[in-house]
Length: 323
Ligand code: HEM
Ligand SMILES: *[C@@H]1O[C@H](CO)[C@@H](O)[C@H](O)[C@H]1NC(C)=O
Ligand SMILES: *[C@@H]1O[C@H](CO)[C@@H](O)[C@H](O)[C@H]1NC(C)=O
Image (cartoon, rainbow, N blue to C red; front, top):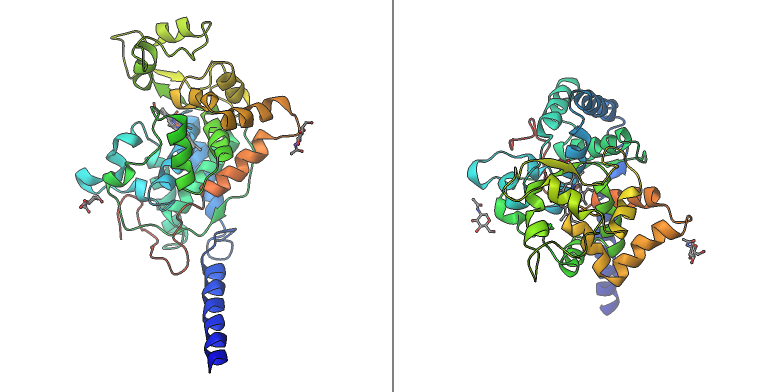
């Protein structure tokens, strides 16, 4: 009797594991049979939009990060559901590129209706964004389904530019990401710009003593003060990767290490022995490839909380509304 129960128990557990493995996974080329042109179509829209506005790759790379960190990579960031919309959360300020996703979706609904999720469009667009910026070209996993929830209070735990290094590490850890992922993914700031808004406290009222953040290199400080003067336009934008804001390269890590970080959260990577050593490893040993590790961390980020298999999700008809 005991044995029968044991055997049944083992069988039930094995079934769970098998279902988990077969249904719960993303894969490269998920749409190969159902919508073979899916990736091609999304990439085309990203390329066209970039010709029109060179900021588009940075928008789309950041959008994928913000999608994945709230409720998983499920397109929740795209939803317009009035004043509680997730996208209106403070932590999402400055996000853009939604129209590129929506236009690609419209074309996909024309070619293969009801097949490609908005969350996957965001992931594919981020891959194209990196490629267009001369970064590494990688295979993107797909098979995400779109979520049913958009609520700005769920974005409370978004990593924030004012966070300490301990808190940044913790917020990444909560998402299954390591200290190495934190460093490598912060390297996404190799492209794009920031508004002076995010720098004002760092320049004029840094903690705990007021005045400029002492971690800013003295050779860099005057330039920053001039670009973002007190009482100046807080919407004025500057490259996050000093002197190298357009192309994907390792310069961002060199800048962070030498006190030329623009964002405070990037500078904080030097406040912790572990993250500092990871930074150093990319700059000191040529055997460590920033680009290869960036790809690994992007794939890992793209798996956060995905709704696959039996988990509830849908394929939206338009990306800013639930079906
Ligand atoms: C570690 C925590 C992070 C913090 C605190 C942070 C914070 C910020 C802030 C404050 C901005 C400026 C936004 C603006 O002015 O519009 C920004 C821009 C950006 N972030 Fe991050 N970020 C983080 C991680 C990431 C990650 C993981 C990615 C992607 C993998 C990413 C990609 C970008 C990009 C591409 C931009 C430029 C956006 C543009 O040009 O409009 N960031 N980030
Ligand atoms: C949004 O989330 C908060 C916190 O979980 C909850 O109290 C609130 O009722 C939610 N709002 C809606 C409209 O679901
Ligand atoms: C890279 O080289 C350094 C020093 O030569 C060594 O300590 C480290 O283990 C190497 N890393 C890898 C991944 O091979």
